[in-house]
Image (cartoon, rainbow, N blue to C red; front, side, top):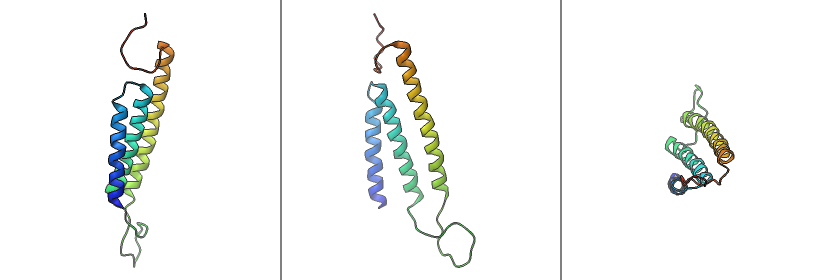
Length: 110
């Protein structure tokens, strides 16, 4: 199962980098969102997909699951949502100010 998720992370990273290298602002924003989701899956996979009891001190439990990867992923999801929202608002503001499309070519209006 971890191998399948690792392959999925690789595909998501490839798609995210491909979108980041384009010239359109919306594709760049989608690329950052996909790349952040790939990192979330990578953190989950590196934390280990284990089954066990809740991490409470009790007698008789042989194996515990670690809650730290889930806490890190939850924090990363909130941060990536805020960054995506900021980038969307920023690109909309650039579109309003320039009056042009979302392409990043560096050409000036004539």
